[in-house]
Image 1 (cartoon, helix red, strand yellow):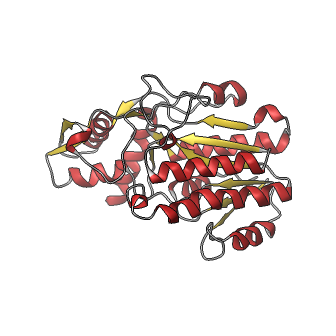
Image 2 (tube, helix red, strand yellow):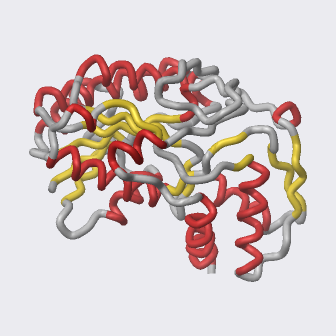
Length: 294
């Protein structure tokens, strides 16, 4: 099976490259050959791949920066996703698209389901929602996969940041009133590959549509940080105390949803795919990051 993935250096792309088995040819395409903001570049690059499925993992992910350049985020995450859907429809290939919990406003008091109303409060979230809408309007054979709080042994992420801060501090302030599902990029990659295999083998419309795909369990950022530091201690790191603060004490240019929890029952029902609990996946991630530091 040949899968083309948009993006070269993101956490999910790196994880897909690592997790792809011998019978999967993974082709990662990014700038300058493929620039999501340029329609003709997207069409030309993907048209030349002769793939079995397309995974759109490339995105503008600078959440705070997007507040000052919303048009750039929209071109990449909104228009760019539409261009990928356009060529997937032309080639008649399944399209898997990675989206985000930030399409919700975070006001519900339970995990969000796929049919809950969206209401993004940030420029990044709005751009990702436009991408979802363009895909749904352009290509029937798609699986839009919303995930959340992604971490991995590669790239910039919360786990790496906490471990770095813990090297020079014995206390770190972390927001405790935002809830979500920490999700390993490696688990995302495993799920994406399983879903792609199924979509290539089975053209059933029941496999198409919108799905939530996040790590099992839930946590606040402070809970997540405490777990990271606890794992660090297992590898000889000094203990770090988490000072649990409120969102109001840590203002950011882009507002974050207070509730980012995603109900992933539909994905398990349709595909039989359920991502592991975030604590289970966190341990090997911390071990790899610390081993890389020497």
